[in-house]
Image 1 (spheres, rainbow, N blue to C red):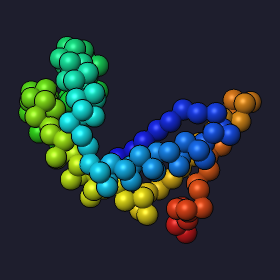
Image 2: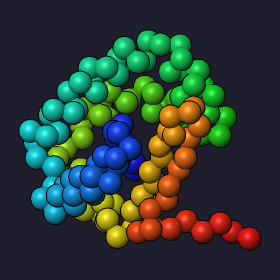
Image 3: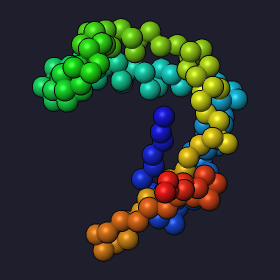
Length: 130
């Protein structure tokens, strides 16, 4: 799971805290039916159009079906699968996976000269393997 936010570099710490707070709120309070409807309806509507695109079939289904043959079945049932998702299911998953103590926090920023820098925050340092 991941969350992304495109913000100005000086707003990155604030955005990180907001994302972590929202994850904690979802873990503690769950996902309401209204929240689910706000995100599920447009996704389900878009899936039909996505399935009509060659890029979807080539990039997401066929390119990986040799290793994951179930992708062909997934593609056939994904609209119904997404439509069947419930707020209770998502609430249980949020409680299980949105544990901020285990979250890896990465902040990447553009330096303005076309190069990029990446910062791994002290809360979850990444140490290279020798």
